[in-house]
Length: 157
Image (cartoon, rainbow, N blue to C red; front, side, top):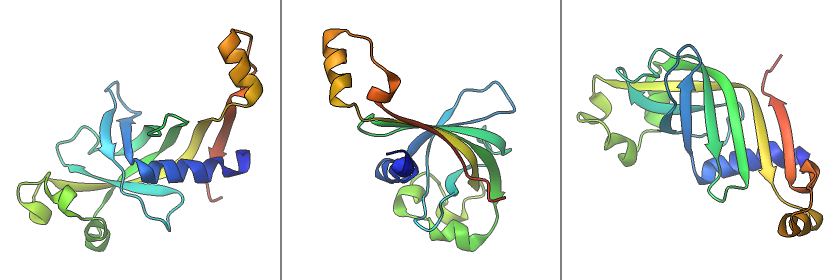
């Protein structure tokens, strides 16, 4: 399962692209965001926000994710940077995104951020039968009996 944990993360994120994002440069809490995914991108995703949003300065950031079924959890580290390319901004634009902006695509406050992943720590919950029995009986469980855990690097170097 360890070989598929990254693929499982992307599938889970596509199924429910809601994450918590915070900049590492300050003490502010994370903020819920909707990740714009691209099936051809395996090391980044995008967010629409506003120029006044606490994430607008960009920089080093952390993204927290939990799958809908709570069988996969991920903490993603990377860098947020402004996207100025209008083709990219238009590529992910939708009616759902437009609903957040008074002037739609032409809103002066519109800001798109790209999140380039550096690494991730991913946990998947897929208990073995022995883990389920121990869980039901109160016996001590080994971590390996409850799923998988992996630290993944997205560096292209």
